[in-house]
Image 1: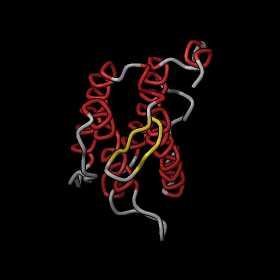
Image 2: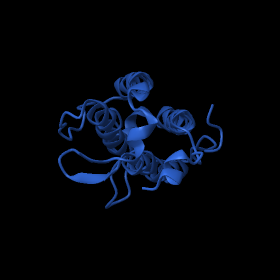
Image 3: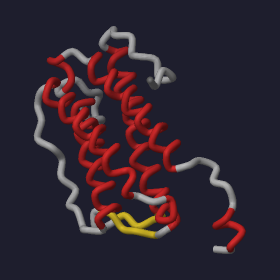
Length: 161
């Protein structure tokens, strides 16, 4: 990488990326809240998974990715064992707080480094983080479809506060 590339102003700062991610997490939390308890882990359109299962995937990736990136200690991909909405929301909130705690340990310089997470995904740090964020946004779209199929108006995706 040339010195001019290193010294160039970033398109987005780490703080802005964190704010963007947490905004999406707030939207996803509202989607979880909108689901009826009895449908969160049972309603799906085959061959897709339930929204509860998708949220567990987000939780298996978010904090563990940051923990591995900030500690450089290998992590295993492990899906949390949660089967009810209250516990899922509690864990969601805990992870949101943990993301805020871990983020300052990820200096801007490392965003261009190549790392491997979960022993199998190798890319630049910024790309690994964008994947976690994009995966949540993508699968949250399934949650929107499910809510509409259940006759429930989903929360607006553009309200991120």
